Amino acid sequence: MDMFAEVSVGFLTEKPFIADVLNGLDAPEIYIVPNMAVSGYVTTRKLPDALGLTGRVTERIGPKGHQRVFLTEPVGTHPLVARIIANRVKGVMSSLALDEDEAALIVVGHGSTKSRESFIRTEGVANELSTFGVNISTVTAYLEEAPFVKNWRNLTDAQTIIFLPFLISDGFHGSQDIPLAIGFKPNDAKFQDTLNQRLVNEMVHGGQRILYIPPLGDDLDMPDIVLARVRQAQKLAQ
Image: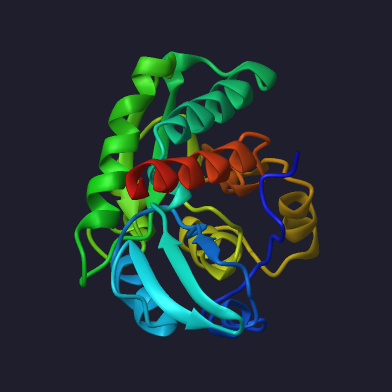
């Protein structure tokens, strides 16, 4: 039996806008799952404001009467995410036969001056990876706060450096900002083609081997995380 009568997708900054999508739904119960890495400013302020939500559960009048709108935790804060990231790193290590003693991992978070959640969650995920068998040196870097990813050379002198963006999608940050800060040419057709195929981009920079893993949003476990977030919201509402 299907869990939902309808599944829709909406966005904050492009069409279809999430507010328009919500206002077009007539189901008595609606679950909104933020497809984001952390429970930061966008998830806790910008998204609720855009939708007119009053909390985790909002009572409202929809197209056909009374509705309950549930705002769940974002997918990126689910405990399974650290294991997904660890498996990606271990897969790259194995497929490229990398030496653990010569490799380092830089987990790249967004960071923010408006909320500490991105920093806290990124640090937490990075610290959890050893639990799942990632045994290489691991540090963090950020787009919008120190230590900045553009200064990655100050973070490690490992022979091989794996960059893993703690992002859900390969949007502008994942496909442009982070690769550019590392030293890739993100507008290069080969780079984008490799990224679109969900493969690892690679280059040599200053004698170091640089690897860039795509964001985790395409992982096969992500739909299960979305469903888990809905079930969690259902239990809290009972």
